[in-house]
Picture 1 (cartoon, helix red, strand yellow):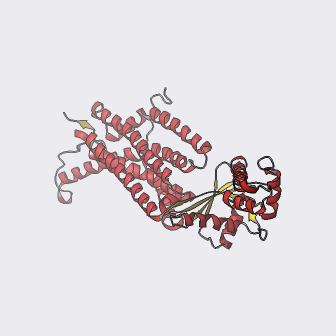
Picture 2 (tube, rainbow, N blue to C red):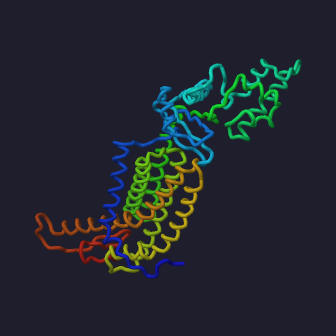
Length: 418
């Protein structure tokens, strides 16, 4: 299947437009990372406490921020979490201690901040543990249980909490909802000691600062090792300039992708790093396809200019590039639209990366080869002319990649020796 039959697009003739496009997005990303949002690291890398909260209504982020500020939690980050209909938010606190007390403290801080109008002397049933509920029922003894009170009330408390968390998603709207889950006398007694808030803390997670720093180091090393591995492989498989072109291209793709996350103020988590590593491999594969065709055409088109060979090679692989990149893009776009909040950062990085990676294989990698060859031929010509431009030119052709020559400023041909 082909989208184009014998295309003849002058990609290298548009290299300055490509350069301007890349500069705009690269500089914008760098400015955002340096002066605006920085690199928005997720809790995986910087450490902190994550508190997952479910509301009975559509959460108001502004109201939550105000409540956090009043409680002294001024560095809290708030983002919507999960499907829209679930009314869940993720609150990221700066608490970095890694112990059980820190988990409880993070939960209590959120509950205290959001319970602005709690009735005096009553506890919040939506944020009550089964143990607290059991102790309350033992004290009230609504069933007059006698000797087996502890066992009966423990079962009743567990049934209430299980119904709240598993059936109602962690938030009860009215005590009457419990009448099918617990004894009516127990449900009636709850009104004396409990009230219902409009939210429930579902879960609390902590990542310590040492773990975060270690993950940062490992993520950087993973990216650097992948770039170094590509440079070595391409230098061995083709020639060193091919490796340099591929590494510069992948660095360009990574810079624009990370810059986009900074501009959008989207946190970079471990899954985003996984996406960036995937992007490096994908972009490198696309670049190698173009390079391989260039190498083949250097043998077949010995007398053509290097720029013409590169243009023809890109055009010959254009249908393949569009087919593979297009199908991959549709897949990750579906993942971005329907994959949920957990995969949102991962899929966003791939959506951006596949577009930029496909573009850079054509617009960045190939022009680097031609620019290098033009520079080498120009240097060769200057050396033949001698100091001050005196002397006679004895050769106008420079040695091309892997024994080939070509790519002078005007009219030089690409030849292959051997």
